[in-house]
Image (tube, rainbow, N blue to C red; front, side, top):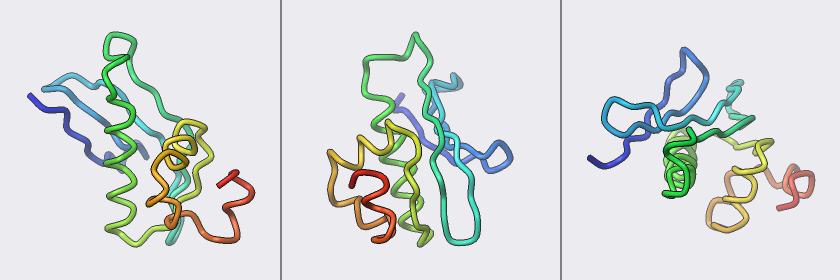
Length: 101
């Protein structure tokens, strides 16, 4: 079964699951038209399979669809955006230097 990324707003995080198993999550704080990504974590037994990248890709696509500005406080999210420059536009212009983007 393909991994599935879903938003779990009651826990303020995007989750990635393989079947019924929670493989990882990206915690966020949402405020008005912004979403600040704070921490990304993948369970040890799920590591090394690219799930963190799939998780962040799905989370950022959801932010884009909702018209949210992204604040990548999480180092993994920041690094992922750096490697995928078509997502830099989600970070407000005035905040890009602060995040090294």
